[in-house]
Image (cartoon, rainbow, N blue to C red; front, side, top):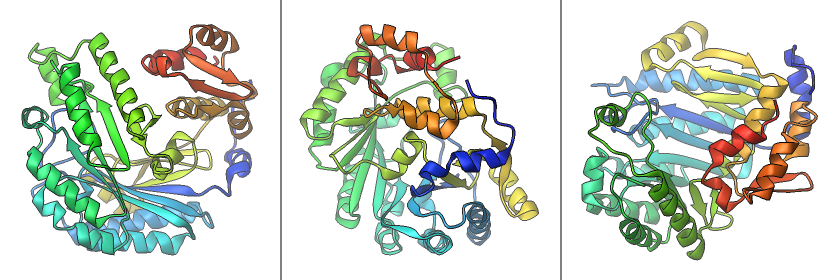
Length: 396
């Protein structure tokens, strides 16, 4: 294994093979109307938000990242949260204008905004499209009213579908999210819900199994015995059904939870999974630029104070070791159906052989992974036990 990284300059040299690749920009808006019981994202409820102060702070945080990535080509912008559809369109416009002023942009730049299907937010869709958003990710989460109530969502099915219809008539590209493997959900129920979802003709679906995350309301209920997660074997059956149904409808899984028509994949998220550079601004945002891991202050007030004090909201900024670089690339890339190129990871990380060859042979014999040439990928059977595979294949 290569010697651990000791000097930041080595990262800049190491990253050069991919320095002409477009990088991605993530902008975090941390505010929500209410906190969903399953959500462990950095989201906060506040009675009021000083929109002018927040716009200025986000622009300052963005300018700092621009100073660290001069001359790079910007391939995508993603507004996440929280609930970024609560952002005033003029704030979204200011950030897009600033970003495209700081960097040259790809001709097909993808600008995504996550949105909830409330009527207030839907009224902003036309203005958001006008200022440059060309892709929306809509948080429907379920096509069943009882499930929406269980998930703590403020909308019902009719409101969600109305929002989807407006989104499809407003934006060039539309995706929506659903959460499945809910307690007591049967395979027949999910099959019918999924068939309905596929019938709306969107180019992309994000289909997530419900997980009980620490610190959430659902975790508290589970600890009290008031919420019983779906059995693991039943959840695996739903996962298999999901992959079969989406593939049959022309939206195969390209990542463990994401399905798209060929060519309609989220280019922004592919930057993460292919371990490209990305800048993150706003509370709690993470970034990876030229081998440096950045993390912003998580609490909105702490982030704002840091921006006022330092001109940016960074809480920690760490140079990644060779091994960390290789491990992150493996862990992210093996989520993709295409897998990873081991030679590319070695070139970028400086680690000569980042995988455990004996483990790969054992897992390949079990039909859980494929390894041909330098390309390593998880099979359909392997995706059900992806976490276990990752702990096996990463070299010590």
